[in-house]
Image 1: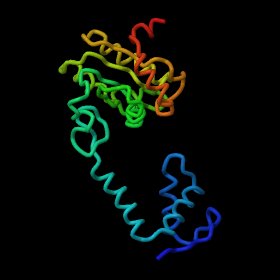
Image 2: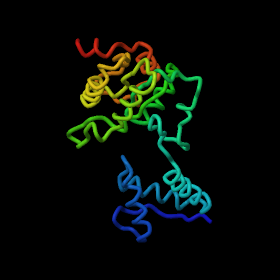
Image 3: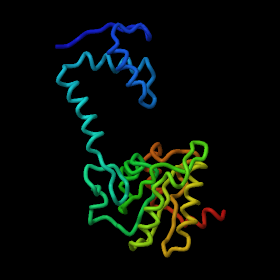
Image 4: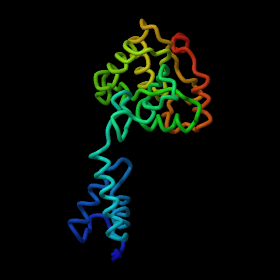
Length: 215
């Protein structure tokens, strides 16, 4: 059975259940109280079965999602589909900030290596230091496995460059090529917002990190 509701002003909630739902939705990034109210009212207009499917999907996601034990990518299994793909180049590792960057690079179809997800970038202003990121597991991976190349594909921001340089210094004495995506991605841009063609060319035309840093 569908339920119809008329729009109401924020603060004049007719139900505590409605108010609680709006408050929870407004905790999502980029969602204010007015948008949260529209979303909640939209759900109330749907069939009860559809709303249950929506809610159960979110609960199932939170309970069953895992992080790949090799690259820290989000996965349904202990090892993600990329790391378990024998056709990919496991000797080339692309370092990214999060899963959104993996999705952006995969969409270019210009990269066939594997990834390592840091889970963020060094940002003292936000209280994020090297110990808060998946850096040690990367170092161990390079030391233990046969890795030919590490590609930095972090956002072209001050924080991204700081993270690149920190990892570079940790890896500099190891027998591995260290490169960085070409700066076809504008300075200050986040990787996920780059168009596929520009990002693809940046991957293909990557250069030695030491050469870029010395300029």
